[in-house]
Amino acid sequence: MNVKEFSRRWARAACALALAVAAGCGEGGREAAGKANPTFLQLAKDRYSVRYYAKTPVEQEKIDAILEAARVAPTAKNLQPFQIFVLKSEEALAKINKLSRCAYNAPVVFLVCYDKAKAWVSPFDAGDNSGVMDSTIVGTHMMLEAAELGLGSCWVKFFDPKEVAAAFDIPANLVPSFLLDVGYPQKGTAPNKMHFERREVKDFATYK
Ligand SMILES: Cc1cc2nc3c(=O)[nH]c(=O)nc-3n(C[C@H](O)[C@H](O)[C@H](O)COP(=O)(O)O)c2cc1C
Image (cartoon, rainbow, N blue to C red; front, side, top):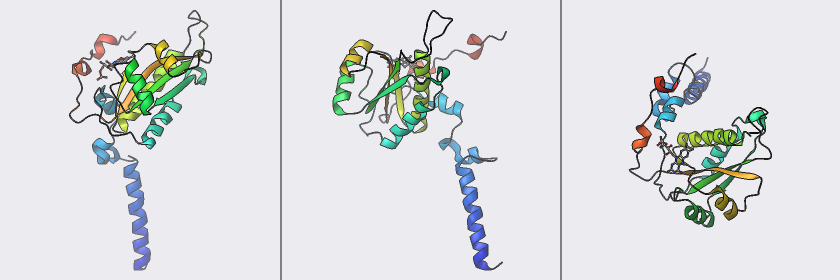
């Protein structure tokens, strides 16, 4: 093997190793990535509700990734009855901040709705539909994707769905389920007291 061939092979091997580490593959891959690649449980524990946002706009690629996380969420019978309105224009943000004191001037607010005509209807629970469950799973995917992207978020239920539907011309079949405020946390933002108030597993899990 001449010197040129040797260095070509070495470069190929180094490249493969770098890709494996970046993907978190193999023993030590995750450790090598350290905090930049937390386990799911660590990401879930580190996430907290952000109520103070920096003015920094959220990059379109990050909004796209959050919507992609929504797209792959499971829904009853895979009916995918959700519709998401991305509120980011000055006009839309002014409106939502007027309608809910919990929009917290975030640079992006996702208004997540479900279509009550499209959601799966249970034959057991007096016609109860899966819209709330489906949209909640969608929102959870979005919230945790935002956390992974280094963004803060806050789940918001403090608004009148009728007022919000009217303000944004939401069709009658869509039910506004919740808002998800998203943006970069203001410097110095930290979890509030409630974030740390968690019950013990033994207090809610029962083995039968
Ligand atoms: C269904 C739901 C509704 C919520 N509504 C609001 C809200 O309207 N305003 C708000 O500031 N936080 C709201 N939150 C955030 C909770 O207060 C918060 O998740 C909880 O106190 C735990 O704190 P943490 O998210 O920092 O861990 C809501 C959370 C959920 C899951």
